[in-house]
Image (cartoon, rainbow, N blue to C red; front, top):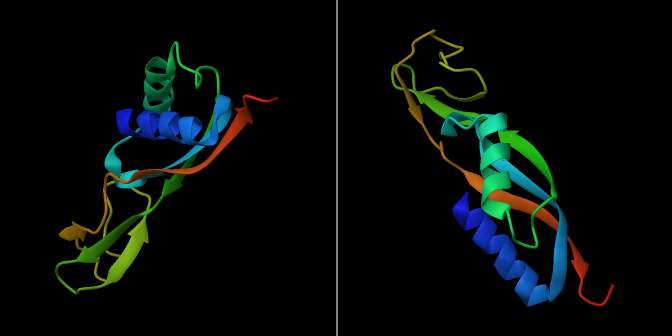
Length: 111
């Protein structure tokens, strides 16, 4: 999350923005983030920055799994996941801790 805030600040500098009004983040569901934890961490990290007070929109990506028994690939938002074909729980996760910025709304220094 620290890197997300640093990226937003760098984008602000590049765009010569005065403030951020909204940020939309996309997170992987298998990253063990809770919405409340993400919001609290974002609030703490943005205190006393031009991002402080920005609206935060969160979207969640389903985790992508491959069953180690039948090799079926599938997406799931449930935890723990089970293979929908064979019911096995021996799974490999393709992505887990993804977190990226989908969009940032800024106010320019000229406004």
